[in-house]
Length: 431
Ligand code: S3P
Image (cartoon, rainbow, N blue to C red; front, side):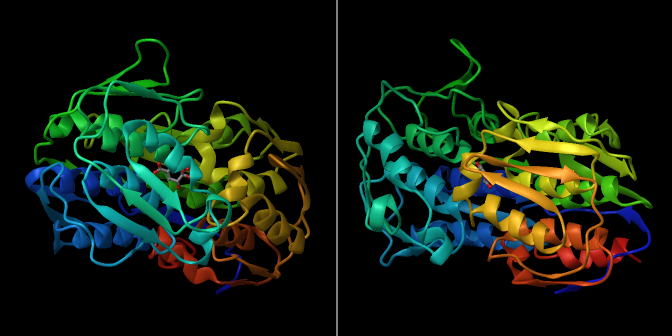
């Protein structure tokens, strides 16, 4: 993809439905006995992988219009054994959260994926599901996929699971499994991660309590999930590249209406504020599907460096490559720490963003758990690689829009993993 830096950016971007919420809503609807309806469902390739998983276990998912999907679930414990391995493609969410949903079925399922997914750590999913009595085998080297999930129904309840890393995917896997246990199941996190599943379970009539011994403590009480209707909010992570671009570009004003403003997802908005960005957030009066939503507007800003670490990391995890891009345009040294997880995402995002930004003239140092960027620098258009990673492709597209001269992004088609219309939306606001 060739990207020419725009002189001016104006407009409103309507982003696709939230990918995290879409995966969860589809899986939960598949566990409910009857027909659920989703509006604003994500059109991401990752979400297609979850739909594929559901098709293989006997759940019928039908498109009813753009973003509108009906899901005919079987009821908990009634998924059939898939007759061939489930191809999760690039989607860690499908593999990990899907494993959780599969665990409560007396079936054996194999889950596999592309080269990127095959390089991602999965022993952690065995670690959190085995206390419930499921058997999860990682057949790749060193706890990597393919995965074999040997479930049972009901699972063993009455346990407390402590995920080895702060990961909403792991927490969700346990909660989805917990629906099919014979007693309550608790997850205890050291750092709170996105709570979309906790918000969805009560919509399907499954009791779920948060707190009671710490903010990161969640208990699901097993129950038969009921079909539900849900309007999925816009994906703040898909709006994020536009918000970052507007802040760093000298002549920009962009609006993203209808985006999810779940406080456990809004880390980038806090980082933008700390960097001095001119951003306005207008919460909508009515939440969508149990999630706060609203409009975010960002304008050209003079940015200053900041430090990003601790509890904000899971709240901004997918936006950290964008923080690195912003840092190239900010006065001072921006430091990101405590983000070792970034190295085991769809690519090693610490190296991937550092390599791309350095090729464009940025000053970036990497560390095992983060990176440091000194700014401001004039980025120069260059040939860079997305390394097969959708978030890196979008972050480099933002950098390219801020650079002098054209850039070429190799592997830019990776954006379809979360936002197939990203480059069309970018072209539209670039005039
Ligand atoms: C996600 C959680 C995060 C995030 C991923 C989506 C989710 O992963 O990076 O893109 O929907 O729960 P981890 O939970 O592994 O940190």
